[in-house]
Image (cartoon, rainbow, N blue to C red; front, top):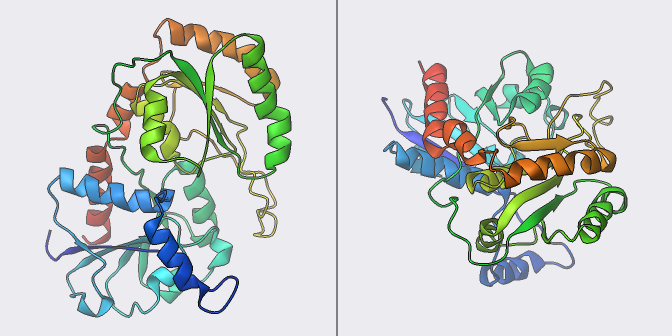
Length: 326
């Protein structure tokens, strides 16, 4: 591959919230506080890991004015600020979170020399292709670090892990889904632990998974779903709430008037676990699911090893790079 591979990841500029200059105080507090890494930043981190595994050299966050004509460019990040000041002719492979929906940035492909916008899965790529044009998106799932996320012999009593990531209508979903599931477990003397998205650190999550017989995954939908896939890499079967539709409350404001097929587990098959649509289906399906768990019939780690390793992610991004810069 001629030229350098240059990868960018930028976060939104911090703005004052309560008083003039408070962004600097918040930045200082954030620096000293043990922080969670956002999903979008982990996409960048795992891309770098993937390339290292394949021994592909790359440069990170080089100033735009130092880009050479033959360089290949990947730009990841959060918000429009990521590309501010880009004035080169080099084509850009861009993604994943530069916008929430194409309607947020309708002139995206006109404002910059964007060749491809990356998406993690088919259902999200379909949304962007509808607005930007057929084949403007390519699907690239980020890899899971299967050396870090691998099972070890547990020494404590096993439990079911309930993973909660309600994106909207949190109180209603707690009342209609989470609380009934907890009551069901209590009534049937099933041991469980509960963890909430954004309120834990990776090491604590891994420790919980290491003692988990299975995981109940409660999220409306995911473009990829790193958390449930990390659980699968730990060989933890998943019983996932999957309503099958895109439920973002802003979709009508974006002009999405027709139902859009979506998934909470876009990378998943019968070897990984089962799904349910509501609490009634949970009650009907849990015993069957748990029986399979007890009998060792699920092999979720095998699915990750076959489809979502760092190596496979690197191979996919290299294919996209070759297609763009051929």
